[in-house]
Length: 302
Image 1: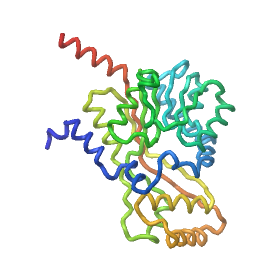
Image 2: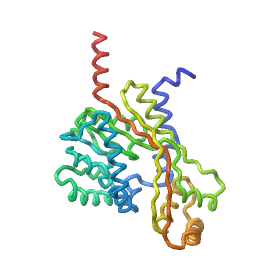
Image 3: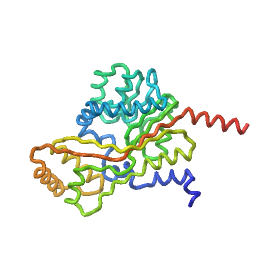
Image 4: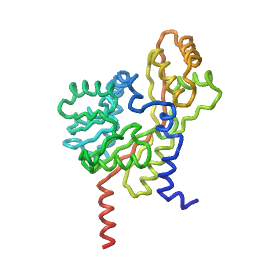
């Protein structure tokens, strides 16, 4: 058993076969990851570029700079760029950004934000990263920083390797590191099912353990974050129905009416305050250290 803890192939298989990963849950619910944000693209964009959103982005960028990342004249590949929440500030700090985003709703907003904040500094690639041949595109080890923030492109270790293959110096990956709590879902869940609400997420554990076993140099940070938003009853209804679908519950007329009636009775003003909290993991992988390690091992065998 102890030997299995240090066998990378076993961890790779466990991650690939895990039925409870975010991607598997979305697949079972019939949700296409590239379309998942379409219905709330504008709300997401507003939250990303308001004062609070800008502060969150700045904290992450400052952490990266504290680890040695430099943006001025750097080439950055932003995978899952959304409306430019990071692509735009990367460009504002002097980087040349390639922004990969498959959602057309978010691409439209990204184009608007580039025109306002970062003209000529961001190139948009409106395609799913999964469909891109990085070798043919000339992206192999082509970017000083590859940045993947809360993006469903990270499915398993094979997808991590594809992302790492694009990076020359650094690769940043962030994802959930445990249960995501949603105050509205907690209120409504007992009204539609007697099943326990299970939202555990082990993908950050797979990632960190495999990076360790495969000899990568990295810095990681696990933090608990809380966000409060105010949305309309219609938006709240859509959000709850998405949660139900993600957790394998029927999104039928009965449950929709149950949720709609609850929202109308509990939030007569039409505005719903939603508090979300959870642990999130960030990891910065140092590819130049990995390359040096590989060269040193090679010299040792000569």
